[in-house]
Structure formats: C-alpha cells, structure tokens
Amino acid sequence: MAKAKVIYECGACGSKTPKWLGRCPDCGAWNSFVEMAEVPQKSSHEARRKNTLAQEGGPTPLTEVQVGDVTRYRFAVAELDRVLGGGLVPGTLILLGGDPGIGKSTLAMQAAAKMARDGHQVLYVSGEESLPQAHMRAKRLGMLHEGILMLAEVDVDHIRQQVQRIKPALLIVDSIQSVYCPEIPAAPGAISQIREATSRFLHLAKRESIPTWLIGHVTKDGAIAGPRVLEHMVDTVLYFEGDRGHPYRILRAVKNRFGSTNEIGVFEMKEDGLQEVGNPSALFLDQRPLDAPGSVVTVCIEGTRPMLVEVQALVGTPVYGTPRRTCTGVDPNRVALLVAVLEKSGGMQIAAADIFVNVAGGYRLDEPAADLAVAMALASSFRGRALPQDMAIFGELGLAGEVRGISQAETRAKEAVKLGFAQVLLPEHNRASLASPRKARFIGIRRLEEALDTLFSRG
Image (tube, rainbow, N blue to C red; front, side, top):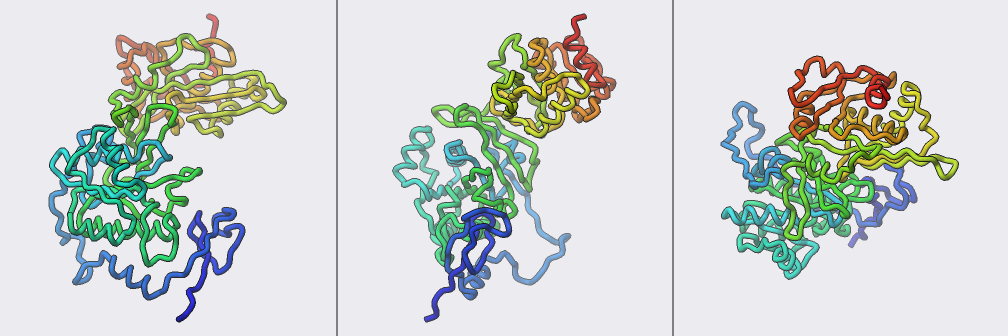
C-alpha cells in the first residue's frame, strides 16, 4: 500500500507547498503552514463529480430558461429584511460572520423561531453546542418551538442526508468551521475543509432550493475563516459588527446577489435577544453632551437610509515627545489629511498636539461627506468653543481647503430638520439647489476658512 504523500497548507491563504516554510511566499504570513496528507486524485474527482450542478442535456439558451415566480420569505423584522434585500430568496447561500459573542447564533435562532411560528420546518445544525446547551439558550431567549429541528452533527455527508430526508424550509449551520468532509485529510477549520464544505452546502442549496445560512467566525484581521476564501462562493455575505461593551449591533451586507450592499440593520442586544432599532439616529444621539467642545452631529447615508451620528474630537497637549493619534470609527489616514488641511488652510497649529477622534455609539464613517464634521470637531476642541447644539454639518473637504458638494444632500438635510436641527451647515454647491424650510436655516459654504469664520467668529 502506497504511503500517503505529506504536503503543507497555509492557514492564511490556502497555498500548498511540498515542504514546510516559515513564511508563506504568497500572503507573507509567518508560521501558518500546517502538515496534511494530500488528497488522492481519484476520491477528489469523485467528490467533485458527485457535487456537480451540471444539468443533463447540455447548455440551455438564456432566453429559454424556465423561471417561476420567486417569492421571498420575509421575517417581519424590518432591519433583517432590509439587509437581505427584501427577504430570503429560495436556494440562497448566506454567510454570516462576526466576532465571537457578538450575537450571530442569537440572530440565527431568532430567524429560525420566526419561520417555525409561521408553520415552516427549520433544521438547525449545531456543531459547537450539544443539544441540551442549544435547548437552554433557546429557552432563555424564549424561542422554543417544535418546528425547529436540532441536529448535533459535524459530518457534511450526514447533514446532507438529513436535509434531503426532511426538506426543511431553512438550513442553519453553526458553524462552518466545525463541520468537515471525511475524505479530506485535514482537521476541521482548515482552509481545504472549509472550502469543500461550503461548496457542498452550495450545491445542496441550489439543487434542493433550500436557503442555507452558514455562520462563520472571523480572525483578528476581520476576515471570515482566515482568508476571504468563502466570499466568492456564497450569494450573500453579512457581517455582524459592534462592541460587546455596547448593546448595539450593526448588520451589514458586503455582498448580496439579490439586493443592495449599502443597507444596514441596527439591533439592540437585550436579555430576550436582539431587538430591532427603528430610529438609529435617535439611538446614536441619545447621550450627546450639552455645550461640549469637540462634539459635532453629521448625517451619513447607508443605502437608502439617512442617519445622524455624533463625531467627537479631543485635541490636547502631548505628554511625551511624539503626539498620539487615536481614531475610532473613522479612517486615521483621513484624519491625518484633515489635520494637514486645517493647518494649511485654516491656520491652526494642531499637528504637534495629541488628537483623538471617536464616532459615538460604535458606528463607522466611511464616506467623505463626514470630512467637514470631523474638521469642525477638531477645530471646536482646539479652540475650546462648543458649536451650536441645534446644528448638523456635512460636506467633503478637498486638499486646497475647498468644500465640495456631496450626493443626496437633500435627503440628509431633510433628516436633520426632521429630528429638530434648526441649522444645517453644508456645501454651497448643494445649498444652491435646496429650498430652506421655515423651521430651519441652511448655511452654504465654499471653503474651510469660511466655515471657521461662520462658527467661531466673535462677530
């Protein structure tokens, strides 16, 4: 009998080599190679042939493809349905990632309970919890239902047999790192195991038209299952974000073949599970300090939803020789750029000071429309003067100090006025096309110096 050939696989990028290496030549990761036996070519070919999606009779013209009425299942949870693009599509494969303890299993159990209450059967595969542990968690959350079928199994083939026998309306696998394929000579959680298991669940979902929900853990770098080897295989990738020290969670779609990738869902973690937040703006501004220098409210757009968030800045004297830069919720490189613009165009010598920038509530600002708000927060803290409590600020800041127009300015301004803000500082390019309402005043500016004079001029 021939001895199995030993190869080494990188746990970060999945590359293989016949000998162990200290540093991966493809991704640069150190000490990432794991010893494993090479898969025989015959068994690998048979596994792929058994899981193929090819139909009999050859290719079909696109115009002759039979398409029935696709009915999305709605969970009646507006935040979840919005992120999914309007509901759950039959046969879709969803990958839900997030930090440990963030609420991934809780969200999946709530979705299963909702489908079970509507008369559907859900198969929940638990590869990390025993059945008594899963029962205790569901009981604590008030989600016990006979329509949720629990299966404590890690063998992909056994899971597939049960799915084909039961034909559930939804399959949940918790988690993809815990299941394995018997013919793959690698430990569960290895790149080859995760890739092959996901491929089989994909074929199962498409063939049986069963929506499948895979739960995946993330690494320190924020990637699901190490590298992003699964994101191109699934239909939808959802990330559950938030700080475990805060009760608020943000569900974000980074890939969605059946909906937008710009929508987010906001939830609040409570004792009985996750509760949707219908008005995130009020949530993020709930504990805003009064008359505090360095506090500014800006309006961001997530998909079709405008949201008001608070930007906080603190400019202080450095204790040590090197000034500190700490940014939470904003890109530190963008903050460094704004500091340089404030020095060059605004005449503020703050580059040698300690600078701390934070977005309250654990939210993250990724769009340039928040530039002006961050710059005004830094200027407010540096000068020790609070900005008007009833003012919202948004606009993009250029390197020459010009304030550039942004998209959906009317939507942002209307949301600010709706929540009681009487003043809106925005680019003049956008203000010229807006009509100021009776209860608010729109202030258009063209340059950074004009914004500083408007907010901090003693006259």
